[in-house]
Image 1: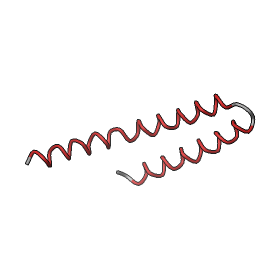
Image 2: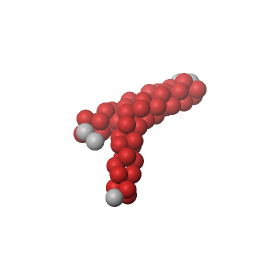
Image 3: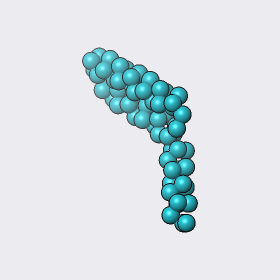
Image 4: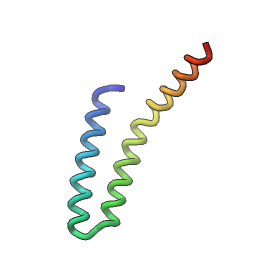
Length: 64
């Protein structure tokens, strides 16, 4: 997993946290929820290929 991906995930986490707090304090709880959900989906789309590679590697390991 490249180190750039970890920095991207951290940046999305910080951005989502700040936006979430701002929206909650302004009384827009539904929009804060959707921002959080969107951040989660973006990160999942980045991580899913690495999870697939991990499972393929584990499958090859146990086929030996």
